[in-house]
Picture 1: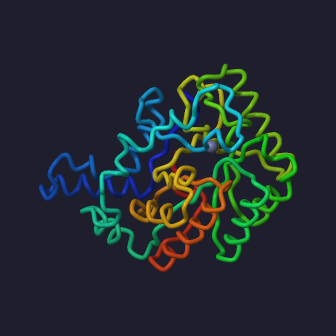
Picture 2: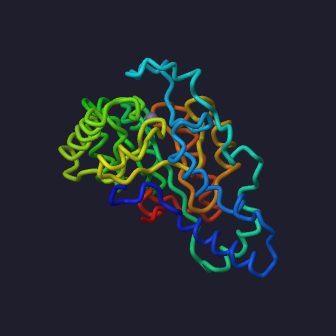
Length: 293
Ligand SMILES: [Zn+2]
């Protein structure tokens, strides 16, 4: 195993687990309490640990956007939606038995959520997003694709200067488990070098395209892999209202939301999500603030 744990429990998730354990001990909560108690952790684990499972969520970008897929794999048809994911089960976002306990335990602590954007930088969309985030004083996390960086160095510099976290999304949008280990290392490393040349800082966080990862790669690449707990499906919906609705249905404290700053609708939706959740007491943080090793 790599030095770093591949998947991280979310602070909120840990609190929920503790709260659920306490309730269970007291006989208040019946088993299987944990099945509904910590969807964040379950989704993180299932996304990373079951690479061959048909229900594995796909980070997302369809081939029709011009992104090359070296695997020749039909991304559109092969992309499972959320089957097997607890997100679609109609689970209420903030009404579970653990929420009140968590709030009580945390006292005045605000609810945190991390917006993450993959597949950029994109000349128009990323610029609009950065403008919108700046106007709202919100920090986000960007997982950059190496091949999209040339010509967009100014946007990468802005991300750094404006306090966002920059991660690595490999060089091209391919399934890394289908590529050779050395090729994966080269692609990841090349992207990190490109980012470091602009920002002076080497990225520590990696989001593999499609969330496609395995233990062999974990051993080879010394980065912390970050998946997500709420899939906005923005690449598929491409409709501001639908994306907003989908995210708001599931979001809760400690979530990591997957979006893509290559679609105008994603940018509009992200800003609306911020404007909706902020009055509800949410603070937007970068992923390093919601992950623990
Ligand atoms: Zn992607």
